[in-house]
Image (cartoon, rainbow, N blue to C red; front, side, top):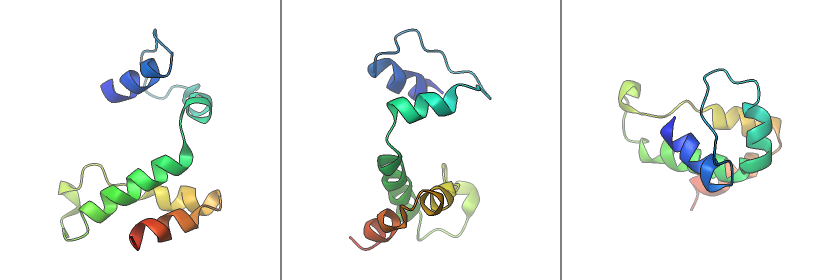
Length: 84
């Protein structure tokens, strides 16, 4: 949560305070975040844990980026990051 607040504050939202289940989160992310960068970071995390079979030690690792990439037609980002 602190990292989310820090990143939004760096983008100009000086008074931003994270709220769990916030209804405004999607619109904030649409405006201030970059979907492609998020997918690339998630793939890097997934690759970092590639040798580990114990998923409980993979924090964070949800693999939601695969769904997002599929929904937004960004599968090429996952493929490109996996074959660097």
